[in-house]
Image (cartoon, rainbow, N blue to C red; front, side, top):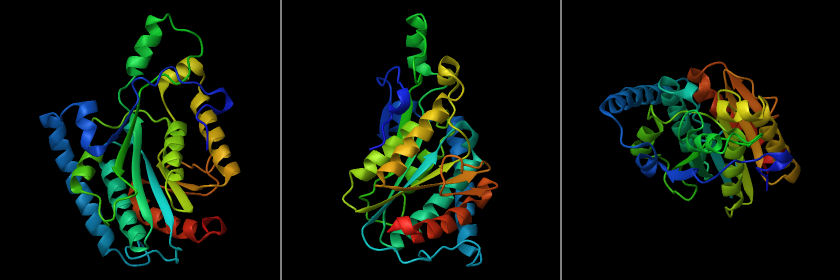
Length: 286
């Protein structure tokens, strides 16, 4: 399995890291304020409008039925969503609509589907950085923030839909912060490898490079990039998981050889659908 400690990657502390279901986000972030609850309502309306538009689009533009390829039974697919600060608001609403559409198509093809999100629980390093400063800032402390990994849809769910309450949690404006891609990929692949299906695919949806200023200032600007690259090299070498990525306004091909670039999040729905068709029809999909 890909190692999050590959190539001397270090973690200052995991004490404050959290992996939660969407139902438990209040325990991490607190209850929504009235202002944020109103913002969720606005984003939910944008999500529903985008979903309606995708279902009414011409068939060749944004497929909404089953996959264009025949997928053999026994495949698990994970959609891993970058929930960094730049995705807040309308971008997250459009991404949620694209993911819901993709889940429906994958489930129609009898794939098991998991939907995960990753961010951090606080800005500016939070409690790990404060502890590091209290210890007089030891050199090269490693990752210096508190991870927040969210499960929006478990791979064992039998339905075709993500609950609306889960979508509302995904749209919280207080959720998106920093993005530690390497550790998120390690987490998602570990969950995939624990599943009984023989064929496994991970699709990362990202709008930029790994970013956490606290970690990068203390360890070097390419610290998180280097870790992500080493994690992906491990996955490709081990050959147990097919992995690809959709870059939103950002070319991720330097990390993910199997990838697609969509120019904006408004193109994500058709782009993700077409990418899934291509990925699952390739020689490494079997």
